[in-house]
Image 1 (spheres, helix red, strand yellow):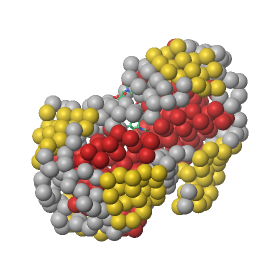
Image 2 (cartoon, rainbow, N blue to C red):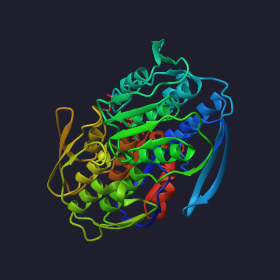
Image 3 (cartoon, protein in one colour):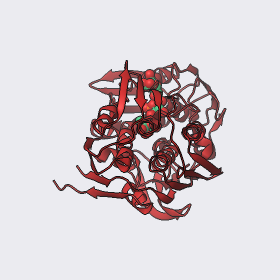
Image 4 (cartoon, rainbow, N blue to C red):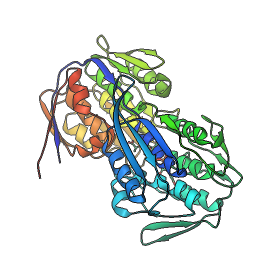
Length: 430
Ligand code: EPZ
């Protein structure tokens, strides 16, 4: 388990290239299972979650060709996926346990091949993470679903049938799964209370290019007219709004100036508004964001996480780190996940002043200094929050359990070093 060592105190200046979006790449890779043709996906980030999903697809019989190439000014991967005939319709426990987004094979395999066995992912550090919405929608579309020995076993006689399904929560995962399933169903499916995250719009773009008929993009009602067949295409995925938001906070906390290249400000309106209120200068072009905090007097702001276009839960931990060093108090409320405050005890070990109220709200009172400490990552975004605290703190911070970061932040140390951070990975050999 590698560690990251940071000596805090450096202001960050320069350019950060934002990578392809992890949470778009994952469903889109699984959408390639909907056709026998090759589908070429560009701008896929170098992340361990992508490697894990690729291993699962290889196990299903997908042929995968990886090419490294320049895309939007930096090195990315273009991966071609081709599944002419799956050799298995089972997503085993060992794959799903490593990467819960493996559940995105559910919709495509069931719609295309009429059968799938998926190990139930179970909960994780941030919450229980149920799948009831995915399963009940598929049942309404004619699937027979059984839970046996920790697996979802889903079958359908012939094709899935279009249905009107209404989600009790605007789940990103269920919206993706049902979009993919409905694309090949017989008849029309209407999803009510669908998620509106930009990752969903990108999946819709891909599916429509492949021949699907989906309307309602960026709204909470999606209409999918099922088609008989989908085809191979080339698609470039959008860039990662959460990575961009994370580096924006790094500029703010170090009183630096970062230009985030390949970042779409439209996808970050709510977090950028908060940063402006905190006192940071933000300039935008259609595909870049300049975050300038050189003369900023940081002032705490309340945050309430919500479904898109609300404030993203995936930036809550990073913004909490910022509020720890801003003047005044900030109330942070987490409304999406029931256990997403695991970074708080670690931030407090570095001198943050945080009071938790119930399980969903925390009052953060800004302090002038944080002190370096060895800290423990608990999940991907919490880990980045600890890196941010380490960049600000006086002295040497060691962040343990770095594998969380490798799941979702491409070339993290290189990106930070290039803009002036004193950061290095300590490789621990087994
Ligand atoms: C996606 O998770 C993201 N993961 C998460 O990012 C992100 O935090 C989350 O959406 C919310 O934006 C990926 O895209 C791979 P949900 P997902 O289904 O799809 C409830 C990160 O850090 N719910 O939108 O699993 C659920 O409990 C990760 O990159 C049900 O009740 O999230 C939660 O309260 C972490 N039943 C809410 O909906 C269901 O069947 C939103 O969950 C499904 C979800």
